[in-house]
Amino acid sequence: MRLFAARFAIWTTVLAAVLLCGCASEQVPSMSQPHAAVLGIDVTLRAALGDTLNKPVVVYLAKVDTNGGLLQQQIVRTNYVKDGRAYLLNAAPGTYVAVAAYSSPPMLVTTTDSITYLSKQLVEQSKTTVGEGEFAFMGSFEVAQAVWLDQADEVQKHYRNLLSPSGARGIVGLSLNQVTSYLGSAGASKDEEKARNGFVQSARKDFAGSAWAALLR
Image 1 (spheres, rainbow, N blue to C red):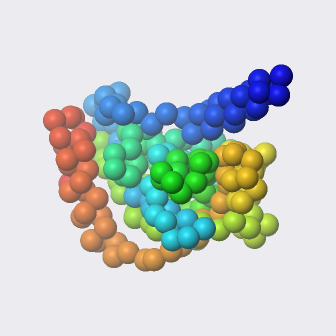
Image 2: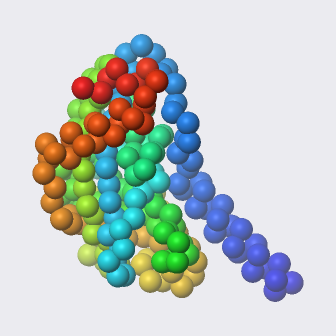
Image 3: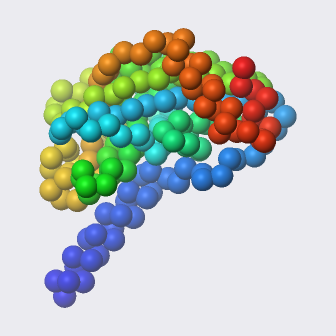
């Protein structure tokens, strides 16, 4: 009976992680219409424990050209990731911000997935507008993870309550083998123009042979 309960607890934890994360496509999604838009973003997570770098498997975005400013009630997940570059393909035209990043652990570092809530500063820096038939780069960010969620700003609190109101905190999540919540603040800065040029060059390879390649200028 105890063995069954333990296995059930592990299964429910894994199921919750799958539902929260969603599945980023391993194949490039097709264009849904001739004037479809693309958003791209590069996020690197620096671990709260140690100095390990990791890439998210999903980045959560919010469309902010509606009432509510940065504090939106609906989010959208990036739907294609390649070597850490996260894309929202077939994006509806409008203005978006990045609000959180979901990552699976590097081998031998930790056994739990995590979701990192970006600070208000990072969210504002990621604010990007994309039009029909356009590609827009949201930026390249190094995000330092922190354990203490009681230090969250209003934007981090809002999206944590929206995405994972019962998610475990930092070290507690590690001990319970649950999806772990972190705060994310700005890490090392990057040259914006250089980052964009490097991202576009890589994106051309990611979308080689597809209709999306024509949007990458």
